[in-house]
Image 1 (cartoon, one colour):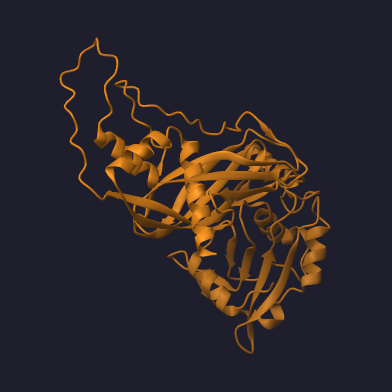
Image 2 (cartoon, rainbow, N blue to C red; image 1 turned 45 degrees about the vertical axis):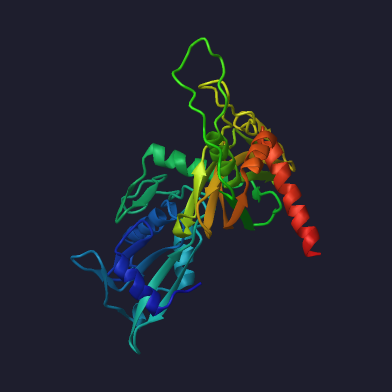
Amino acid sequence: MAISLEDIKQLCMEGESNHLDYKLEQYPFVGVSAPEKAELLKDVLALANAFRKGSAYILIGVAQQPDGSGLIVGLPKENFIDDAKLQQFINEKTNRVVEFSSYAVEIDCANIIQVIEIQLQRERPYYPQRALGGINAGTVFIRIGSSTRIATPDEIALMGKEEQLKHNQHDIDISLIVPGNEIENINFSALEISLSDQPPIDSNPGRFDITVLSRPITFTKKFTYVHDVFRTIRVNIGLENKSNLSAEQIEIESFISQCSNECVREKEDFPSRPSEYPGFDCRPFLKAPSLQSLKLHPGKYNPSSESLYFEVMHDGDFTLDITVLGKDMQPITKQFHINVQLIPFPISSKEVEMFFCCFEDEDQYWNFRDEMHKGRDNANT
């Protein structure tokens, strides 16, 4: 899509780069020999081969200023080079068709900016098939920053690798599964427990005796464990391979990109349950096995590829970025918005003891939370 004069003014503020080139004067083209057009061919091919994410532009009629920015000077309208003639000149000399367009953006009634817009190319590298004006056949030019040079063998190899990845594109859908929620915008409540009665006084276990194999778990440790459990969110990451390619050596990266009021913090695991054996606080629940050494076959869905844990600190919301990496596949990222609420939940000392006995492992806790949700839903109906 053609850019406007306002767009050109914005590009002039950016300075030259791997997707932008300023030219004060028009390229030699009309009434000159083919070798004299070599500079034009080189600049177009260099931008076609550049590593970039969007379209590239040659702005003809823009001067580069000492600070690197562009100054709109303009060209007389009669100096415009017809797009069809440019297409014929470039593409009859290259190894494959370069996708670009050329058009005029009017400054005033007499002057224009000529824009050569070079789209992201489907296949690279691009190079001249025959020698032209000092450019050897097969020479691969590339735009790096504000300069144009001959590409190195490593850069050419990377172009080929990048194209191979585009052809072998995996389509991995990422979902978040939170108990009671299976949607992208997730609401989750955690509980902030407090004691509604006087807690028992912890007995002093005394000096450590190596002959004593176990010690009673104090009430304080039990309360802390139950408190931490009720404030924990578990989020399971589900992956579905929608492509016709097997996904191998999968790794999952998570990142909290936004968090209001630091409402949550990430945890490595579910809270560990205190043990009566000193130094052996137990973690009875094992996280889902990593898929790093496994394949996700085409059309297959794994609802528990990995589990993430968060401790809710306040009411708020956060944005979670999940990135899936794998062998010979481009990274795939999806963003999820999660709302959290921390609800006051007073309980008695007796209930602390009961919950501590009930929550021997993580599954028992989540089963309890499921029953709470069902009870609440039934009460609402």
